[in-house]
Amino acid sequence: MIRNVTLKWWRFWVEGDELSIRTGKALALCALTGLLAGLAASGFYWLLEVAHYLLVGKLANFSPPPAAGEKGLLHSALTGPPLKCVLLVLPAAGALFSSLLIRWLAPTAAGHGTDAAINAYHREEGRIPFMVIPMKALASAIVIGSGGSAGCEGPVTQIGAGCGSVLAKWLGLNVKERRILLAAGLAAGVGAIFRAPLAGAIFAAEIFYSGLDIEYEVMVPSLVASTIAYTVFALFFGWQPLFTMPHFAFDNAWKLFPYMILAIVVALGSKFYVIVFRQSEMFWRSSKLPAWSRPCAGGLITGAIGFFIPQVLGSGYGWAQQALNLSSPVGDNPVTITVATLLLCFFGKVIATSCTVGSGGSGGLFGPALVSGALLGAACGLVMAKLFPTMGIFPGSFAMVGMAGFLASAIRVPIAAIIMVSEITGNHELLLPSMWVCGIAYLIGYGKTLYRSQVRTRDCSPAHSGGNSSGD
Image 1 (spheres, one colour):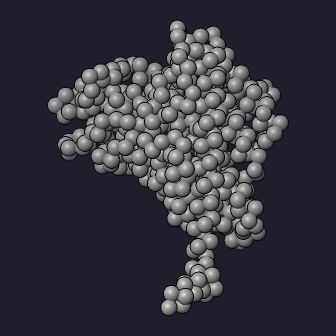
Image 2 (cartoon, one colour):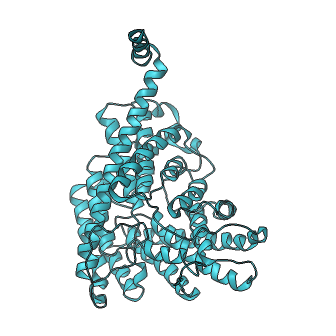
Image 3 (cartoon, helix red, strand yellow):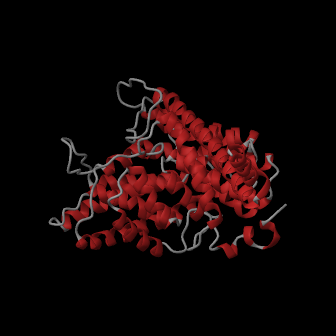
């Protein structure tokens, strides 16, 4: 009897039901994509830590505060003030070395990563060359580790997407399957590096479009791949969220009004970010400087800004962590920062990121958007606390919700933004104000996006126009 049951199940999976065979194949491919992307994201994070330790730490004697969940792999006891003269030129040196490395070995790895992955999905039939994976990781680690103002999500989205694309190529899959694995790898990279597997999957479905549309075919594959990638990453670096903060609750309906003001503020701030970055890109592309030297010039401007405002250097996640703990109602030593300081850091971060990445430096825009949203949200929270002293407004909660609203407006991913900030902070009690702020900020930011390769809807995508979407 046992033999008959076993034979029945064997035939069901291998011989009989075509749907079951396809399901098993799809599950295996998505899991394998997640495994590869998780290992690649872990390797990239390790490279980033080593570069940060050797460059900003050892050479410049500078150690910015980390986010609570950032696990430093290498520790050095720094004494004395940072060497500001080194910080002035270090981002330029890192950007120059990274630019030459990419120019010689993998020209397609240039840029900020996420936009390249979106373009590959829509216009390159899901193709990303293998050399992009190691070169993007190394070049981005050097740029960010030397103090360049950029995020790690741009590189890791292209790295993860590359894992899916290369796997599809090795297995001889068709264009549609290759695109799905590209998106699943993208989700896996984001889910791993941000410790946010659900947000990574939703991000992969939303990021290809600037309008109210999603790539629904990639949702389930992305869930599988992102789960595996997050698990692999967490085995190396721990299961804690990227940030920690008090568990603020939404307990007063009248708070929707100050949160509405926050939505308007972050929407305008995100528009400023998009405009400055786009203008920076146009300026550097029209520059008469040789293409390989532009990231160096942009890095020099970033270093000059960092000379006076060191908070803009690197990823800046530690400063976002401080914004989340601003005027915390718990703890003996709550963080206190003035509105002027927060605004100064916000404008400095936007300009420094536009110079670093807009000039061609290898790094992401998503991470700086998170940091900018936290800084602007905390500043708005401080003002609202003064204007409405009886409401019990904590600026840290405005920093968290500000991150979500900023992402929803600047990157056009409102649902992923709501889930993302909840996962990376471990705080699920502010979902309602996050929904409110993201909805308003998304509508106000209509038509403005950081990623040029996004299209408005599925009907506008080459991936869904004719036979190009189904096979080679």
